[in-house]
Image (cartoon, rainbow, N blue to C red; front, side, top):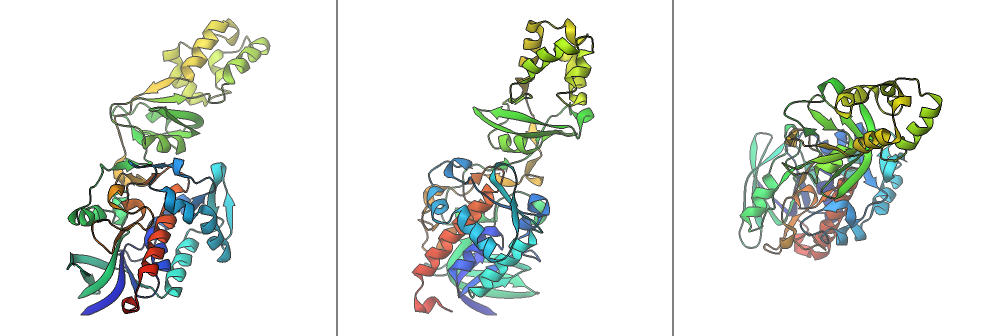
Length: 401
């Protein structure tokens, strides 16, 4: 069986569906999954942190930090928010500009499916790519669908299969393999936005304890919550810093990011000096954490027994807790993949390959990785829009197949 189309999009995720909605008639989106937008569905606790009001180029990591600017500036967070609002999807803002659906993340999936179908694109699910080639003009893909083999010919091919994160959902390095076949360089990839682990599991007794911290590594820091787990550290601050951490490095936790603890303890010493110091410190920090740190910091006696020098040393240590993770939880729980297809071989305006005309790369597959908080979805929307618009503008009447 043979099927001809103008554009074949590999991947029915955020970027792929956004691209198809703008590439228009003659576009075919395929995905191995039974349902589209699976990572959208599970994101944000099922409510999808679909963008961030503060999105800018500084919120992304890449070997070329300027590459993302074009797409992000031409399809912004405000453009996507307008689309969400036009579809009647209620939303709310959480901390740090993060926007979530009031209801379910599947509303975003339904919106995208509706948009691509209204644009004349097709969506084939439970469809597997078996083989791919290029004859100098067109791409030829062999697909397996409903037990049958189908050959698809397309003028354009869009790689929107994401990265390696969450392999249980089918994530793989497919986009990297295809891009490399067409002469593209792949930067080193690693799990990002991922919990950090320690080989000796030092925080098992603290599992479930959370507090606001400033987590720092390599000159970068994030003021958000940290969570102690059986295997190590998680929570937003840790996920953020994991993108900057490398094996062998230490991270620093400031357990008093406001810097107010020393003065509070001094004042408290005047009114509760006869009370146990560990107990009183537990009014400011989680009690289990204080008990864990007490031996190393020599926290003992009554609060009134502590001199200014002792309080300064203890609070200083709490603001500069050095820890050396041994690893991460890997792609199994990583929200995204850091690195990917080198931007040096792509147009920042159209996302088209500079090696093969008609080849486009978008979303997580590209070496552009956002911070936690809706930034990676915005990159998917912006890069998908940029490629879709470029494809639509480049079409000739013969492409409308």
